[in-house]
Image (cartoon, rainbow, N blue to C red; front, side):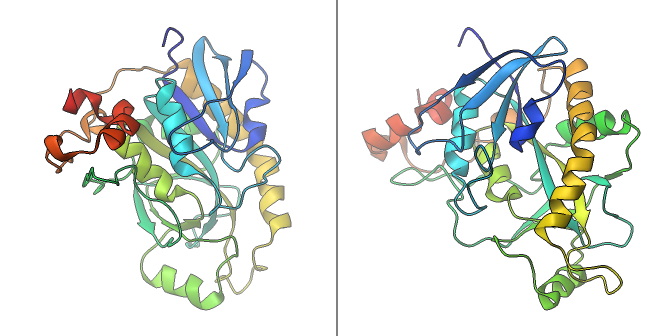
Length: 288
């Protein structure tokens, strides 16, 4: 595309209503996997072309399981996006990760069960490597951009994704803590895995809104609690995104851009033509 946009932000619809974002445009992008959660908003921030996608739709109309993660990632791939920053709410499973803090996790544990986790099906199989599910280079850039705001930010941690939309029981929360999980949310899986299949770098800026339900001296998490903390952190998130855009480089030396090189296992001659066509954007450089 002539207007290639390499940086994208997935998060709440309020993120792109920020000072300094210019030349905005809404783009409706259809994909072979259905419609994305919302039109993609593109614009210029600190001289950098960026894209914003409201994960849960405008007005937060989609629950975490209803989000069409495949369409969202594919739509950003259509735009030429090479790096995605996920801005999300999370609960803390550690005493030292307090509400209001930000975490840039380095590991992911998937406890979801009702979601499409791969682009590869219907005659084309890929076994993607996700030992380190978040791009280390991009995560380093996210960490630095948050540190520049002066907010409290933690490097690393294991992010467990539950199905939702309900919050955890106390028993579940305490089990997750015993497993060594650091934070809990509802959207990082399968988003991170699909981004890897699309050979897009992916990192998370997780905003701690509560102590989940394990903390005996704190009230159990509520929607009101989550929204209140997110509203307080919106300016921090916007400033961090602005910092990231200001020093952004599209260059990549990580392995994300060649994640499919050793992942495709199906013999090319037996791939159904309709499947090859459907996945052409993802696999053409390997099957041409």
